[in-house]
Amino acid sequence: MTASMATSDTAARSVPRGVVPAGFVLGGTMLSLVGLTWDIQWHTDVGPDTFFTMPHLFLYSGSAVAGIASLVVVLMTTAAQRRGRDINPIVGGRAVGVFGRTFSAPVGYLISGIGAASFLLYGLWDQWWHSLYGFDAVIASPPHIGLLLSISITMVGAVMIFAVARDHRWGMYGTVGSAAVLLSFSMVTVLGLQALPRGTVNPVNIGVAFMSVLILIMGAGAVARRGGALAVALVVAVIQAVFWWFSPWAAEVYADATGLPMRDYIDGVPALPSMIPMCLLIVALAVEVLGKVPAWVAGAAGGLIVTACAPLQNMLVHDSSFPRTDTFILTLVLGAVFGALAGILGRRFGQMLRHLAPAKDTANA
Image (cartoon, rainbow, N blue to C red; front, top):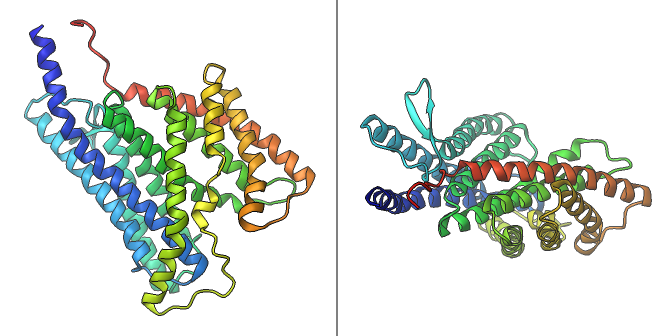
């Protein structure tokens, strides 16, 4: 009885220490997402930029905040372990040895810290790139690709950090929020598929379907509660709505402040928000309804919905024409196939996130 009370008291006192650094990591990833949507809109509506712009400062500040928070937790964990104290795994997961056990790092903060550190390295490359070639006219430069992947790693770490504490309210909310941020951000990394040949299939739509289904099912599995997929999709919808207003507004205000003209042919459509599928709530509902069936079935249904709605969204937002019938049908088929794969991986990743949480002590229950 006494041991059980002591364990509960220790866990309770450790929760605030888990909330604060986790909040800084999540806040850093949200800063990066704001900087990204602003930067993409800037490239779309204005064009040239340099290394030191406001959108870039948001991107770098976000990684700095997440990286410093991760470093502080690693140093505090290392110091506590050297003093012989028990490390409560609710703070970022179980500690693992780094650099020959010189440091002890909770696994979630280790991942988020690695992402932030690699972002710094790619940032130095980006600065060299700007000094060599001047401004960037497009977002798809080699150092930018590395920067985007680094931020994605930090966001994965944020999901892991909160998933460890999913039995607490702050952990559950944080898991949903961090998964939504990761899903929104992943729409930009999917644009790398534009380099693939576009003949009888649309690779970008397939990639969007894959990432959307993967993260929705993963988030639902990590929360392990009914409505988890709907919660992630709802937060994504809120992000999409806010950025729909913010992105063009921020680009125009900053262009006026710096004395740069807006491009003549801009259509006023927010770049990043328009990449996010507007049908995610429908996909999430399908995932919830098909929760008891094999993961590949729910994933295939989700992939089919996203690829079917993508041309309709493009027609609504960009006033584009409907694709050719053969392209549409083949994209649907591949969307279902990759959606099925995403369903399998998403459920496995959700299980892995649940296993990060400390095992419950039932001996004294």
